[in-house]
Length: 419
Ligand code: GDP
Ligand code: IMO
Ligand code: MG
Image 1: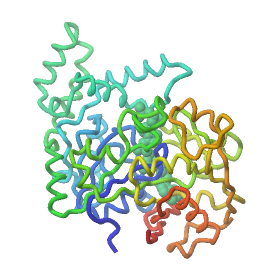
Image 2: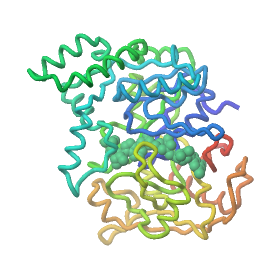
Image 3: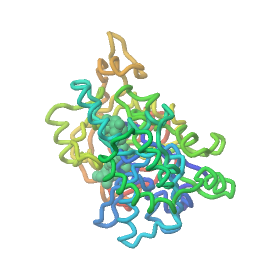
Image 4: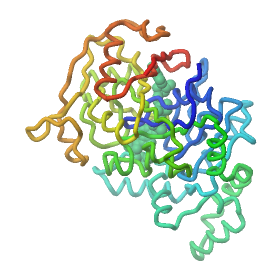
């Protein structure tokens, strides 16, 4: 059975960390091309093979499949240190990257001052801080849009890059010598990987190849459609695949949304179903919800169908992959948020501002728990009746079928279902 065909965009439907890495790794088995289209090293996509856990920040997760071509599109912001580190680690483990990775020369690069600036900005915000990952994402995208950024094509032409850097930054550049030497090294490594990713992906699509676009972050962190200003600086929704890779919307066949069976958020910002109680804490401990990029504890709460329904719309999601169902195994009952109460009214869709969202009280429907292990289930029919009902209810509430169900971090801990 082929798991995917045509051009598929995979996106997170919540605040990131939905388990995209695991699902991309599964689907990449059938993909000829896997492409990242936005975000940067703020992403942390975990893949487990046997006992070996890997977290990818910039490298497309498809790199673990020998025959897959990996692309990093111009919509991504590249931290050269992180990408070079990933290339070197993979090569050291015997995973060949040469000839299998193309990075767009148009991708903007994160330089040391971007990260310093972000720290200062977060400090300055004080209580209003966003809780960013300190990967320099905001300042790098800000420079890009202000048309004063540096791109990978600039970096790999290193002599010109360093001369231009010195010219722009004025007389005293002695403080720059150290990082410039480091970046000369990165430029040397990355030079051979720079290429025309837009041409490569369009050719692959036109040749009938299977293409998987790997979204990073999640819909609620989208700079236009998320809980602004508590968002990241890119378009995380499926439309970002068009602008980040240079493919027309008509070339996308299907959008798969990944959602967790409950909700988490790292960083600041409104989160209506957050459980600040002991229950939230036990969920976090059971699920080991700590950030894959920063190690920060993730805030935990119940599945919010109001927000996911919205996310399904913004992305044109056709089906959902529901992950981490096993985390709910021990619960007596499982609440699902189906609407909000706001200002004396009942809302079926979320308000548009983060301020109003913070004032929303969730309206819960309580479903019976299953109090049994789901990790060994291999078909949908193997799940306890209450777990099947939970999955079906989520599909109904979100308006699209749940076709993939994940009951553990390993590949084989996955169930498939017809849409
Ligand atoms: P991503 O950013 O969306 O790729 O997600 P992360 O990798 O940051 O976080 C997801 C975490 O959940 C990782 O540690 C995965 O190994 C793990 N995971 C994925 N699916 C499942 C699942 O169904 N059950 C459990 N228990 N863990 C899962
Ligand atoms: P993956 O791809 C979860 C969050 C940060 C912060 C906000 C802005 O692993 O799902 P940024 O550093 O992007 O300027 O931070 O976005 N954030 C993520 N949260 N998963 C991610 O990526 C995230 N990438 C950024 O915690 O709240
Ligand atoms: Mg993650």
